[in-house]
Amino acid sequence: MAEYNTIRTTGVAGARAAQIDEGLRAHMSKVYGTMSIGMLLTFAVAWAVGTSPDLLAVFRDPMTLQPNILGWIIMFAPLIMVFTMSAMINKLSAAGAQLFFYAFASVMGLSLAWIFVAFTGMSIAQIFLVTAIAFAGLSLYGYTTKKDISGWGAFLIMGVIGLIVASIVNIFLGSPAIMFAISILGVLIFAGLTAYDTQNIKNTYLQHAAHGDSEWMAKSGIMGALSLYLNFINMFMFLLQLFGNRE
Image (cartoon, rainbow, N blue to C red; front, side):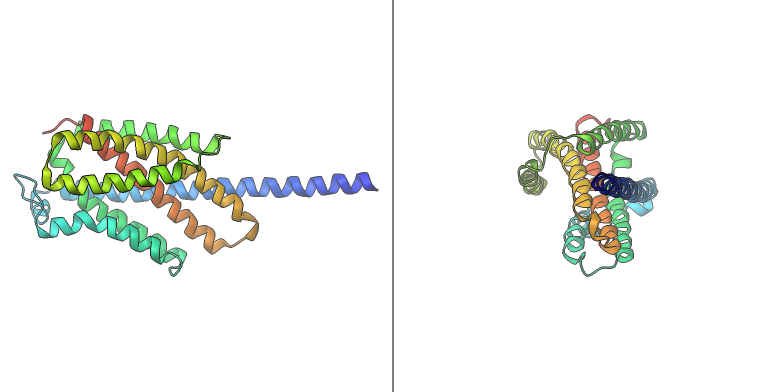
């Protein structure tokens, strides 16, 4: 009888573990799917505006690509929207959070439209492909590694804050040397964040899977998609600054 109970308990535990594994795969698929839709929106908007001189002129000088007042607003709007979404996520429904994410991705496209004038189309495509391959490898590492890399978090977040401050300062200094250093550090920091965020998304799901809160899980997946999206976009932009061929 004791042996039967042991087998039965083991079977239930195994079935529960299999259910959690299946749920995790579905959760990660939704995270990557949401991120991918956001990426498509961003590059569709960026291409549509960047390849239309009339539309781009609404935000930037067509010759110098210097932003006007509206251009400055669009430049900083994604950063403000990220902080707003993080602060309001508990008040938003899952559908509202997803809609906010897609609106953010579209605004990000407006802020990146200038790259289609500053860089060759082939260069943008090549850097995008390199970024996609690097991102996939780093995210796979974060998902599969048995090593706990949660200790990277504080160091990487401090690095992001440093990059933001340095980038704002260099807007006024316009130093190519500082921009070069920022780009190199940016690639390294967001590469680390890709692995870190992937493991964090996975661990967060595993920690809360037993609660069965589908609404919370959905919003958690959208925030995970936002984190990975930001890592991809930033790696892409820093690599483009380093290796992109200018028009």
